[in-house]
Image 1 (cartoon, rainbow, N blue to C red):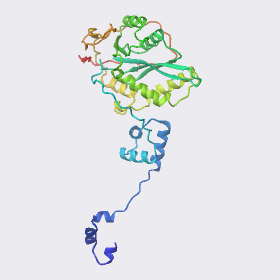
Image 2 (image 1 turned 90 degrees about the horizontal axis):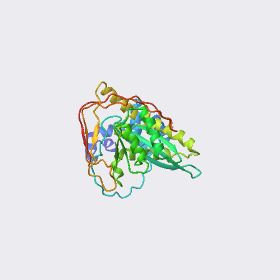
Image 3 (image 1 turned 135 degrees about the horizontal axis):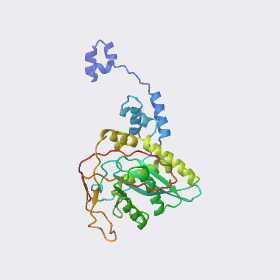
Image 4 (image 1 turned 135 degrees about the vertical axis):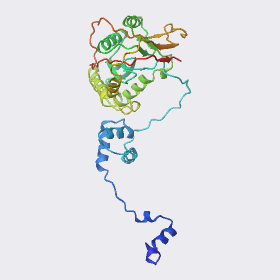
Length: 334
């Protein structure tokens, strides 16, 4: 503007300074981000482990048309970032496909234990059961101690509520390889997949679920008693299935993902039973399923009898079984 006052045209002045004429004429229009910022703060308070991408997905579900880069800018500006943990040096480990990967709902369930403690220092033991295909948490049973017979009780209850899974994946803990449990599973018709000792990455969905349970519930709450822990954990489990968005499911909840799968495959015939070869078992693991698992074309046979069951401590939610897609599929175990 000073050069223009000295008789130099705007075009020549912009050429001398090295800027465009449109930049010289630009007038800023500040955007009111107060409402959006308050909503992001509310999300950060209620969802303490959410990052900006999950918050952005939640805003889009609410009908808010907003760019993820704008959410990221406001998220950093307000200091809402989740604290980063110091990453340990990763060990080199073999990579490969998950043994007998789930192909449809109620195909493969994973179950394992996670531990915590009450305020008085007494330990809590939790049995978690997860549907690997839909990522639904079917049950979190909380107690002071959980033995093989308690695991049978919980599974018996779940089998009565839902369709019996083809396989149950677990580690080689004493509760999961107990003779009573193995005999009961053989009678029920459900197969077992035991991961290789010292290789938790062969059970990735259960490990990922435990990470979310630890970060979003156990590390955020103080438990007074077993009963208090059951109430809090069950509330979180329902929220996990029906409200929490999963990036691996396209930012859908497990319940929405299952419902969409049912609608897409309505009326299709279910795959047939799968058979596992027990050859190649490592030393000390005689019942190790190691080679291949193939889906046949014969339909699964439904159980004719429903054994009497007793409800576990945790309140379970009943979900109907669905018709499954037909067609052969092959999953190779590494």
